Image 1 (spheres, helix red, strand yellow):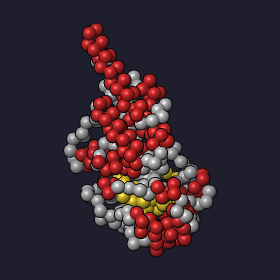
Image 2 (image 1 turned 60 degrees about the horizontal axis):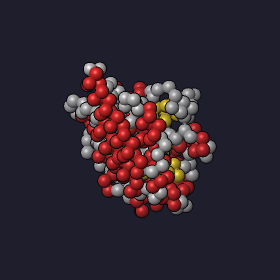
Image 3 (image 1 turned 135 degrees about the vertical axis):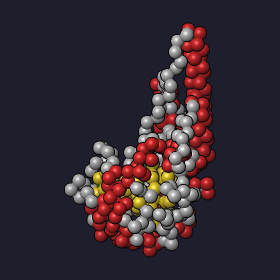
Image 4 (image 1 turned 120 degrees about the vertical axis):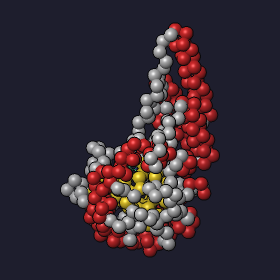
Length: 346
Ligand SMILES: Cc1cc2nc3c(=O)[nH]c(=O)nc-3n(C[C@H](O)[C@H](O)[C@H](O)COP(=O)(O)O)c2cc1C
């Protein structure tokens, strides 16, 4: 299946758009660890067209992030067209993605995100408007419908395709479900069966094995990972290995995990305009990186209280020293080794 943007593999692995998470430094990290494509967090078309500085600053990205899609949302076709034109001229990503999936009240109240799914003619109008504003390929990301009663992912997919969407990512939950229940992968399979454009599966991939399973069970053309990348950007390399029939690369050990977290922190510090505010925002990533480490309650508590990036290395150092000392005690007393790392959960 040919994608409307450059991909290095037949079945591309895509870092999902995530507000507050899929920001430039994390996107770069995920590209290094095997994501073929990354997408910005959703950005308001109104914010872009009014040249709101906070919105525009989220559009900055480096060459090492390409292939990159910029995701925009809004239910006002003119605003969407103008936003697409500005993004194309100024930022030149490989493609523009339209968010028809966001379930958040503030967004759907104005029919943005999954709010559009209540009215498929509006969905088409928005897609056509964005296409009119850009020379870049336009893709969409949808949920399975607004509510259980309106659940009809195949129909939504066909409408998007007919309006000119060049690829479609589906998170098979309804808006009403938010994040409850489980993603209905059989809907990905049905949409894939019905559409001619590439279909990207998304939802509930927590491990590399899940990525392989989604591909096998649904036949999707690409696999998109959101929460499964939290604290484990290497999930992309692992998933690639499994998709290619290779053995699963091992999960990085503690020292390596800390080194990756510190590298991520350094990238954020360089990128963000307000490093202290960014350090507070970064606490969540720190929590994700240490999830599942033995005896990490104190570590987590300290990381969740950092106010600057400078504190992080010392906290990691304390944990590594504690770990070494307790290994020595165990060796001296003949007690068993420390427990093995549990797999990090999303
Ligand atoms: C913190 C967070 C922020 C998200 N922000 C966006 C967004 O900006 N645009 C979007 O299309 N989806 C967004 N999503 C939805 C994800 O892209 C994805 O569809 C959903 O999390 C299901 O995939 P997963 O099970 O792999 O997490 C967000 C999800 C999370 C957890």
